[in-house]
Image (cartoon, rainbow, N blue to C red; front, top):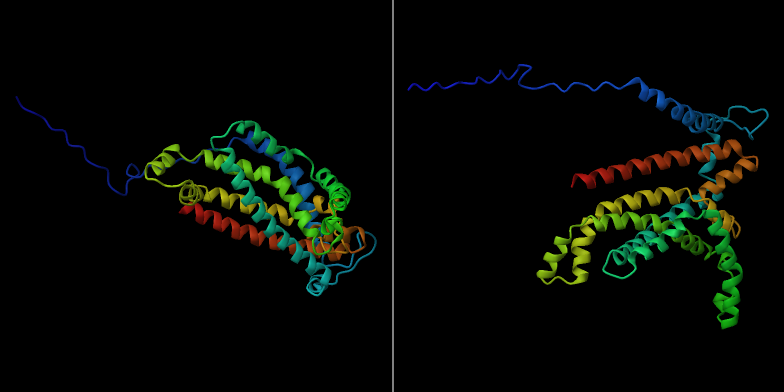
Length: 308
């Protein structure tokens, strides 16, 4: 009985059948219709005011009345203004310290709240509460504690350094701001770390237990490397948010004592109401450029981490 063998000839390498073309998916016009309101609101509320502000940063405007172009004078003056330089120094130092405190505390809490302990679900709820409270309310509450309750307790206990308000000390007031800001920011960071820890397979820890690894070794050699991506995310989000610190500082110290705790955002807003509109718009534009550069660097680091 004869057997017939069918031969399949492959299409030429340059033919259309060899490399199938992916058709571009057509976007329905209805999507653009839904996008239009958000685009209009964003343009009117953010983009247009930013462009107007950058325009006036090259003038001597005080926010109303007549004005004239003065070129780069406002930008040049920024680099010789001690108040502006001090606000940049304070803001970046405050952001760096707060990022470190928030991430260390949140990570340790996340490790504890994902371990085998009782009432861990209820404890997670308790630790998340500060995240839903307004920053200005938190600041006023802690202002009362630092200004009244803590000094009273220090006097009753006979502790001299605790008998004075930390908010009145130009060298220590920033510690209060770091403490309160971290108290509010830790819950959000904590949730991200909990998500990262819960994504680690339990088999990894079981294998480590069989190999005789201690809890400390598991934390340093298994947990930390596997949640490194979440650390990058928290550092990027935290540093960007803390650079824009405003409400908690206003409620705690209002930039004082003197200008010791005045952030960049406070300096800009204070200038708007004090007749330095164009000058502080130049400050805001310069700060915006710095934020863009930092964001690009952080994005590059995040992409590099994802590529590993």
